[in-house]
Amino acid sequence: MSFKEEIQKRRTFGIISHPDAGKTTLTEKLLLFGGAIQEAGAVKNNKIKKSATSDFMEIERQRGISVATSVLAFIYKDKKINILDTPGHKDFAEDTFRTLTAVDSVIVVVDVAKGVEEQTEKLVEVCRMRNIPMIVFINKLDREGKDAFDLLDELEQKLGLSVTPLSFPIGMGFDFKGIYNIYEKNINLFSGDSKKNIEETIAFDDVNSPQLEKIIGNKAAEELRDNLELVNGVYPDFNKEDYLKGIQQPVFFGSALNNFGVRELLDCFIEIAPSPRSKTAEERTVEANEKTMSGFVFKIHANMDPKHRDRLAFVKIVSGTFERNKPYLHVRQNKNLKFSSPNAFFAEKKEIVDISYPGDIVGLHDTGNFKIGDTLTEGEELHYRGIPSFSPEHFRYINNADPMKAKQLNKGIDQLMDEGVAQLFTLELNGRKVIGTVGALQFEVIQYRLEHEYGAKCSYENFPVFKACWVEPADPKNEEFKEFKRVKQKFLAKDKKGQLVFLADSQFSLQMTQQKYPSVKFHFVSEFD
Ligand code: G4P
Image (cartoon, rainbow, N blue to C red):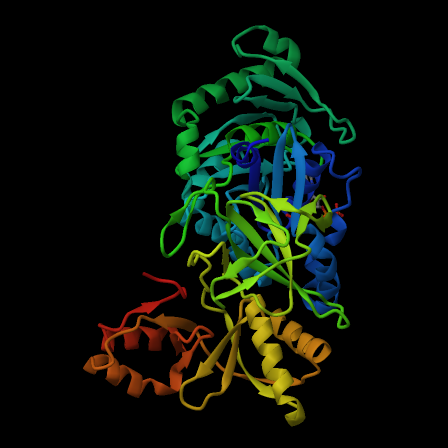
């Protein structure tokens, strides 16, 4: 198969949702279709459960397993599908944001009864900002839920999407009869038997035919005709180009648990979803079909076994082919590295591979060389952008609780920050270290890992911060900037990259500071132009 064909056949995507909408169940059903797993439940057992919020040890245990589910790959109808796992747990939202830099498209799962929920809003916003093509799957149609049109409205209003339904439910909950597939022009009848692999599909391109009554009954037939007429009148026709540009989002309805509507989703997905796309580096835009290899690290996973303290860096291949034992330039460190055992991911296994293509994810064993966002190339100086840090939600001073282990503590903090577990800020005034996290849980995780992996002990102290604001560099001679730095010295810190950060202690003080120093520019993400 030619290089171009290899690229064409790849679909690398993520499934995003609010916890409990059915992401894990849908992932599993997709894997079943791909023949990648034999029974349901295989992925589910690896999931970080809601109940684990107060039990971080359980999360750590599961983290060990979750490396296997970080990338789930399988072949379906000659397409190589790579599903990148995005943790639904909100304390791991940063992980999900970073993973979204490595996907070429996403599927958004929404619970029919709950509609658009908070976590979905946040994640979809990130996708919208990056124009990532999205397909929406409205799940749990076997249960009573919201009216389909109300849901479509909600998607438009709350998520700012421009939707077009490609399937439409016939009844719902107790009365759920099936789905009319607008895209394929057929009717799928719901049997409610999840073990059945193929539900009954009846080709049906003329909904006005009296046959419809015979299949779904008088009332449902009339309702379906009305609904489809409304769909036709209100929503634009599906336009693949608009979908690929991220300005139109097709919607499917179904029930992941009952394996209903999933095949339709997958079949449409492989047809319309993009193969690996070009990616913009600071220097230029790189096309997937360029011959020379480039890729970037979007995730680092530490081995939890203290005897093997290596880490696995996940690299998304952007262009060219990644080959085993070939030297690549680690751009940030300006040194060449060779990898004798790059891992590829299949279903739930990982194995050593000789060659990987754009869209693929390779797992590289790392002894501390990599940080999130690092770029590998064949010599060109490229820096892939788009892995920004957002302001953390929780901040605490971190103190050394064992003076004999200062070195270990610093090394541990350094490496955990490289992995992206949390963000480190060093105060300008006194050099004290402040840790910022998305969820309160991470403080426990850090403390535990510092002790068990690095033999260091830490303690925390409260540090009330409302938001970390990245300060745009200004002329150091600028009087206003100088004044700002002098007056606010107590609240200024450097992040890990040495960028200046203003740690505002309240919304009010942030507003006052902005008013007082209008020429000082604040940003709420770490990357800005
Ligand atoms: P998540 O990864 O998005 O958090 O959701 P997950 O797939 O774990 O699904 C959350 C719950 O919703 C699970 O039930 C799951 O069985 C159920 N579910 C998923 N899809 C459907 C569907 O199409 N119809 C119905 N009725 N339920 C669905 P649970 O009781 O929390 O977990 P479990 O005990 O079944 O594992």
